[in-house]
Length: 207
Ligand SMILES: C[S@@+](CC[C@H](N)C(=O)[O-])C[C@H]1O[C@@H](n2cnc3c(N)ncnc32)[C@H](O)[C@@H]1O
Image (tube, rainbow, N blue to C red; front, top):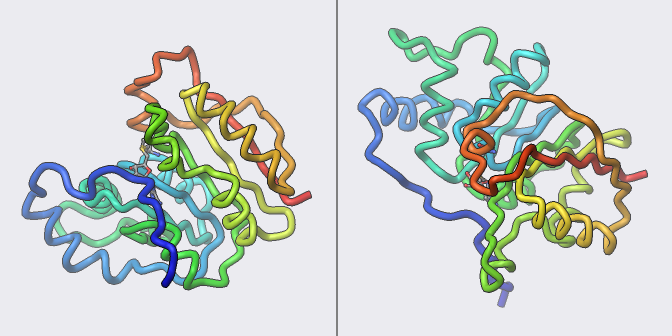
């Protein structure tokens, strides 16, 4: 029997969706199913950074993975024309996987220039630690989906989780650098539940 995978995310549904959001989930989302892509963002929340990636990388395919359907609905609303529900030109490269990213990765042979993970759920209680997404096992898994010069870019304002990730990296073949970065503020960063002064970032490569 296959080992049951540990769930790394919280709820999949929040408050009731608006009629427009539900229509976008029912009719538009199936047309944005990802195949291969250039850039992947895992756990995009409400999708502010996915949109930023699309605006800054015209012509590239940006895949966002997020199982929280209200977040998916927020992104769909933000990338479409309010009257026609059509995707705006600047967001034409966005594709959405509305579920656990591990299920998407198992079914693709895509190689990404960048894999972004911003503010992964910190699961601060010791008994929830096994739910943390950025385990050595997961980092090894996603590193197989990088181009030769590809980068995994991680940001978190939870400094204890940051140190925990550094420990995980030691049992992988990945090389870590700690960059100075200035990127748009996501919704979770704005909340700053950890109460730290700033997020810390990490760039991981296969060489
Ligand atoms: C704390 S939120 C941060 C959201 C967003 N990146 C931000 O900065 O606002 C972490 C997100 O990761 C998502 N997530 C957790 N495990 C995931 C998985 N296995 N695949 C895809 N997304 C996942 C959760 O649903 C949640 O929305």
